Length: 140
Ligand SMILES: [Zn+2]
Image 1: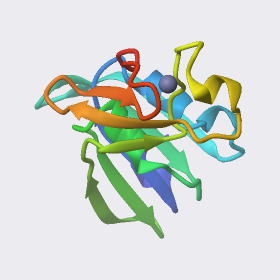
Image 2: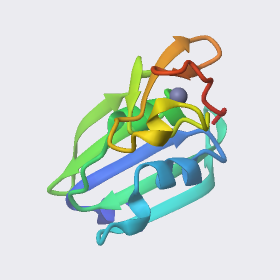
Image 3: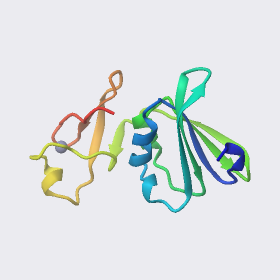
């Protein structure tokens, strides 16, 4: 599958090598009906190697998830076979229902209906902490 073969969909490009699979899982792409391709360790002039995810079709994407996994990724939106938009991704300040708190005593563990909220506490090290108990999120 090449970009040219996508009529309507998105291509997540310049993902750090090795992060593509994690992003694929966190975006919930395993369960979708649309055609999704992951290319790992594709050659890239600037970064050396990169991962790429191509989604052929309309799949709702949480851009915060992309920013969390790799703020250096780019998102190309394809409509009618043409590149119509190139989105720059930023490190999100807050993550809602993306990752789960690992603290067994956290209120979100007992109260399952609560949203899983993490806040960016250190942009430099990309550190996120649970908004309820301040437990640090496991690294990417
Ligand atoms: Zn917590």
